[in-house]
Image (cartoon, rainbow, N blue to C red; front, side, top):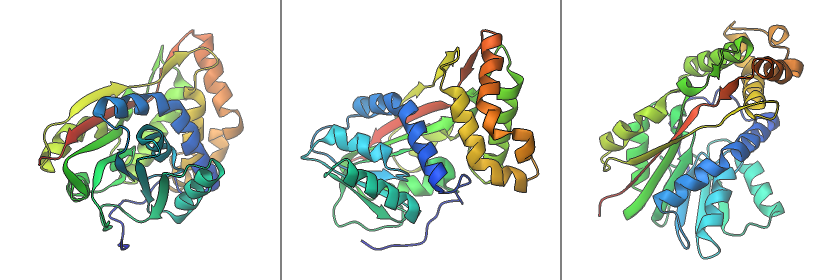
Length: 277
């Protein structure tokens, strides 16, 4: 295996300890959707799986649970801090069938082919996702699975319209778009797979929706704003004082509860296909 330069855009949310913890909380909210996607796609016992952009390791740990002790998961990330955190978590939880490597898997070389390649909320940060998927597919055996779950931020909204929630979601979209991220890439997955030389994928869509005080949507948006705040200030979109992060989640919660409304997360669009033999 050799390292090479990443073909990824700069990850707008950074890799601070706070951001890596946010990724884990987000992963907990999205875990049922990703588990269902992997089951439906065919991730199963004994597989060797490559996880693209592992972050804090949550998708790799989910895949490791599905493939069992006879399987193996390699998680990869361009950020050393992410790889260190994921490795430490695997050691604490004594998960022996997963390991983590620093680097962009589209540019790395591996000694053996994989049965499946997976990723969640990662292709959106690549400037050329078609080229990335094409390169990743080289690591797959014939008949191997490629499975991605990517967002459509247009789905992230409220009803009745909750101004505080909508305003901060709008700022997240602005900042991500300005960084080069593709905020509706979930809807592009079908064409991306085809352009990369893969059969047209099967697809599914999931999203968090809820009202009342216990919906996770308020905290997910507030934590996203927290990680993006340096970029939001740099772009002069808003300021820390205007955001008032310490009260943001509660203000969104109060606003939605008062109107007996609901909030929706970004849609998570899953796509899966098999590499031709």
